[in-house]
Image 1 (cartoon, rainbow, N blue to C red):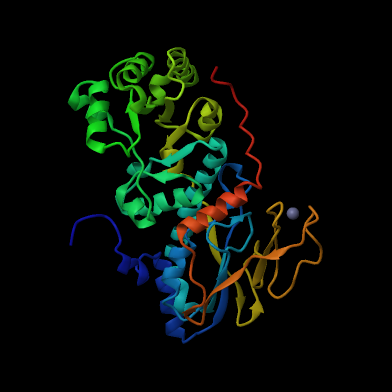
Image 2: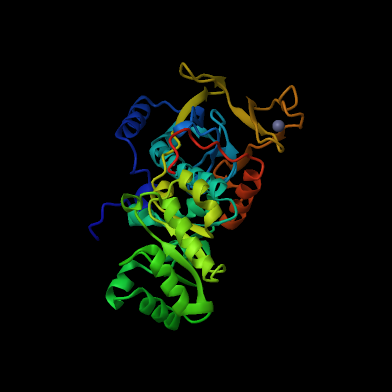
Length: 398
Ligand SMILES: [Zn+2]
């Protein structure tokens, strides 16, 4: 066995990635001969950093696990914009059949939803500019496909890693690393060599901050490459930036004054959601790293809310199986006891629509999850209903 600190699919699907108190609970229940049919729900009481909404992701992986068990599963579809207290997933069955999977299912939902939500927030901040996920490299490679999928699902236009792009059925997106320029010794030489090797179908984006000032390199490479140059990329880390906005403005100015208005600017290097909002007017695109790949998790928990048909929940939780209704206009949500409908219309005036759907009935998958590209389109459609989040208060970089 290769010595990597990762769990295999088999270990995850067999319930081995679990907190030991669940296996001990199972042992107690078996020892006592107790079998009880319960309803357990997954809910987040709040979101990181005061996010008012989040994008649900990780449901597909949870279903991949749950479809092997004799349970019934209901919930919201992947890519749903949801609010605190919305029941995103509900499992009904003998607790002994699914209790040990709580750890793994939470892991699927919490991390993927955090990344998808941060990607969606970056999507809103970047507007119509190209947005590419560059941050898988900062996380364990075993989860790169999950990270990139969640980023793409949340609204990124592309992903950097080859294996993730393959799984998503899209072309990976990338330019050139500093390594190429260091080895070939010069930015113009490296860009020309890149163009020769890649052929005309790859748009040439030249990395211009390796040796010299971004402004002079941008002009030099634009003059040398002419029409073949699509954009220049600044990957200046925040430690070197000073006022990054001023550097970008200066590069734009020097290109424009020499007639290179069509040469775009692409930015990367520790960009945050706020950077995107600030720099968007000056550039064509962004590569966003850890602010997406290392996004805060959405902290779901799993709680039993019904035992043998009786509403029963711990203090601080509402008992009983529930359903989520959503407003198609303002994306508000309403949670009601299962089988009931909201008594009134949404405060915005629109009629509520049911959002909870059945995924698995008694161990049989009754609905196929959608392809990721389709989920992404649904996320983008919902984002159009949401206003861009307010930029946080704080000193301007100018
Ligand atoms: Zn509404």
